Length: 104
Picture 1 (cartoon, one colour):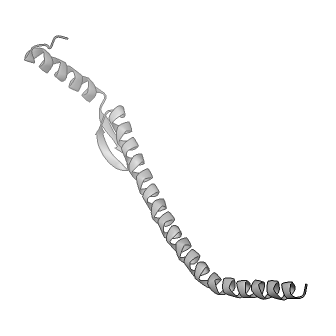
Picture 2: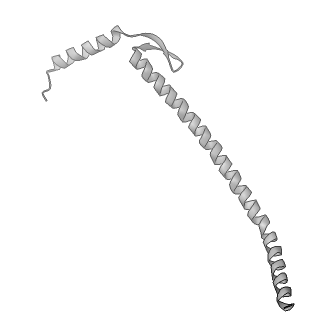
């Protein structure tokens, strides 16, 4: 691949910029007034859409984390509450087994 001279590169860059500016106009992208061509405004719209999506995902993650924390708390409360039940249940089963074995 051969690289052109500085003048050639300069001319190509000017031509590309000139072509882009020919189609440039004012428009709205991402809620802001911008100046540029349609492709540039579409990129700005996409960028704004991605920012909004990231914000929604971050909000959802925050809500999910809060829900997980609440579920962990509820699980801990249930686990602690079940200790008393398990002791009573085990005592009942031990007594039941002992009485039924002695009656045989």
